[in-house]
Image (cartoon, rainbow over all chains, first blue to last red; front, side):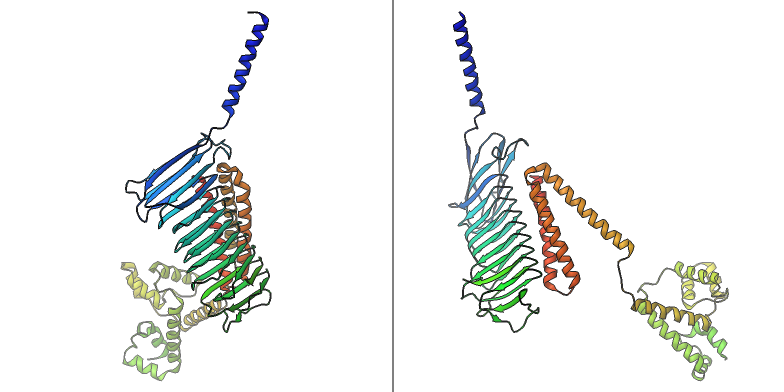
Length: 291
Length: 218
């Protein structure tokens, strides 16, 4: 072999090695697993995930169908179901602490039957559920939590900075607690709607119907309530050091549990005052206006 | 029957009323009647002040010893309660002591009455304020809370380094909430809205701890 041939051979080897290295460095193709479980009425589904997403929607029959997609081999997805079909669990298991957020993310698409208990815990993964009735308990540090189109459901949410969005929920018992995330509600009604934040803003748009007890409490966040003229509420708003602004035509209450202070607190009734609405902030601004 | 003899027997007769001779003396002597009236008043007030359970016999014996050492009572005199107590102690020495027991003098009762009145005045005018140990305890609780918060942040840093700043900010916010709400409740103890906000602030902090713990376990 002369010198020219040797150079050519070395070049081919080097090129092959480079190509092989590039191939190894490429991310793994998406790895999707689909699991189907039967779930007894009143059973529960639990999803534990860090990053990625969790999306829930209705299934047919009594089946739970979990489709999980991972983007690296540095995470595993563990499925558990009990023999009596009372509980199904899917859990993301990060294998290496050095994994990046992209490597450890998993996207869950979960089809669930109505009337079950659903528990989802995530760190940054957004949680979205729509058109499902049941008992929901969602917790996320930073992933947006969205609940749409449910009736006669229990909605329990814990959020650190995750924004929370609830819309078109009727007959719900909702307890929402967020430290710094905003909470937005549109057409959310039921026997009990309780929202509290430390610094997150709270927005409510709807008629507070159903004769329920609505309580919106914050430390430094703002509270904005927009009511239609037809709303039948008995409303009180109090702020220790924030401002309270009312643009809704309430009737003055005949009896108050506190002495209203202009700019700091007020109370009023609209129509028969069937629902109780209490707005409280420490330093955040409270505003009530007509839709 | 003279006053001295009547008052010496008074500890034994105050409940029963004594024999016919003693009863006759009481009816005729305003001074002894006044002493009996004072004793009954003290006994009634003492029931309100003292706990429902009698202290142990040892307590009365110690009191008696102390009074004797202070020279407030002589060897031959003891109180009604001490006699009652001693009679409950089934020892031969107590029986011997009981045999020697005599009643308090009017001076002794006067001192007792003064003590009761003094105690009443103290109780009525007692306005609890944080004592040094209480202040220290509160400070210690505050320190413990700071340590717990730091441990929580440490745990979050290990498990979710990216979330450390978020948890730190949230803890800072919720601690400020608690401070504000506490102050409002202290300024307006009857304000139910302020109380609710304080409870809400603690709920918020509990939520942070719960979330951090759950994430750590994951």
